[in-house]
Length: 274
Ligand SMILES: [Zn+2]
Image (cartoon, rainbow, N blue to C red; front, side, top):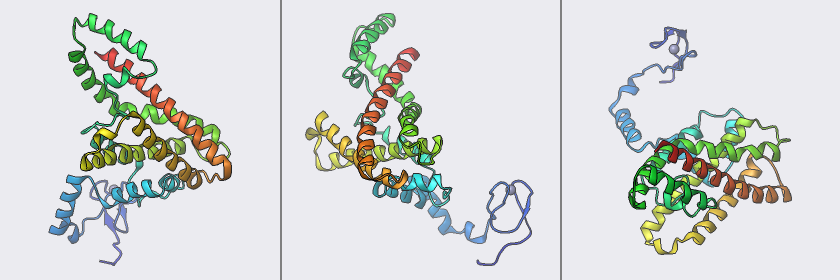
């Protein structure tokens, strides 16, 4: 099927063009092979698993070569990969099916252990009186359901907050504001996949649940994020030497703060909506 198609009329927008894709709306010319049974089977597989080649490739590169996808996108090489934001929402969907490890979801229990726990306690008790609820259990069920719903959308708050300092750290690196945000989306994808989905899978598979306390989790988060920041700092920002070490350490702190700010906003939005 190597002959070039000429004089095609687009089925979607009536534009005249040559080639396999409409140059106005992007519609593809349907070829006999597009209607084959093999193509149907592969479409079904993609629809069930969400995982087409682009997605697997993009996810794989995010893990083994952090910063590469952000670099490709910033430089306008995009068609070979899944948009990181789309990858992010797919991973988010999987994550919120089993939110065992608290990262972007934050149950009432997690909120009660946060640095602003005194405010949380006070606000919750006021709210419980207003709703005439007596026990924390039933309140926490209602709360967690609402909070999970908001969390899926509000993770973007975390992404934007955490990307702000990058505009200062790497202001001489010729990157746009949206490039920094895209980079943070890649970091969020990395964390969702490695530190929640993959980690949950490994812990369940080998029955390591009782080893996974707060200290173990914090160490894993620290190590994996340092790996991501160091590697991607070299690849995406072309930073080297001590600069990259220093900026990565600082970014770890910023990620921690951004996560707490995000969780605090999530808490108040959830309370306000009840
Ligand atoms: Zn068209």
